Image 1 (cartoon, rainbow, N blue to C red):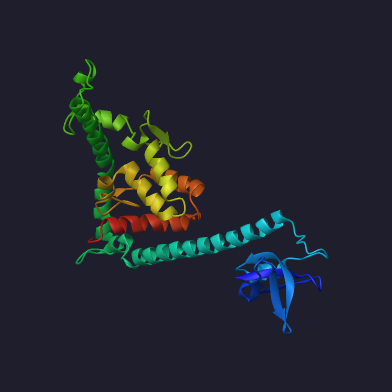
Image 2: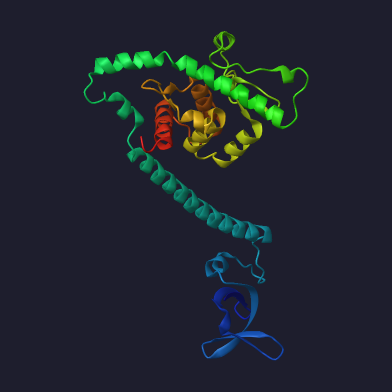
Length: 296
């Protein structure tokens, strides 16, 4: 503890250790100087010696630095401490993100496996096989939509929501001609369907997501755009459907829909920091598929 004192005999101020001050029976303060006790007036006490030194005293022994300035100085000191703690926390978060990205980057890319022709086959033969498999992509997307409708009908039946009109709803199988014609004439997928609790992910994208889920992801991953994009893909398309997909399709995989890819990139570019370039976002999507299928 230190004290800012006023020497009554010399009308000067100085900062001394508080324990060097002596008090009389009348509680008058004095300090020993040159083998003699001199009366003093205690102006301020504090643990901060530098702060006491910064105070100025007029000829009458009054501290003329305004009290609000003193409070402001203490407030600035507290802000500096808070800023230091915030920087340390931000540094730790960035370090953990970097470690996680490095761990994902070390895993083999799915495109490296796709680009390699199977043993005993040439690249041309592999390409012909991929072309034949790509013809099934549109039918797979139709089946995803049919599966979605079946789930909706089952939900309505389980919750007693069916009416006279909805009870007549029939989800046709892929083997029926009516189903094939309906699927070919209706191109919308489950994520293209709006609803009372859904919002459009990005303007003009025609891609919808539950509003409460989107608000939660936006709040939780504001400073982690890569994780935000992964979670949005899972909410919009579904993890089970993502397991059947890849970024470009082919080799037995369904192509990731471009409308969803564009909508997610547009959303995180607007709502997450730092922004991801097109190449960084492409890499993020590739790593997402790799992490979903670690054993393949």
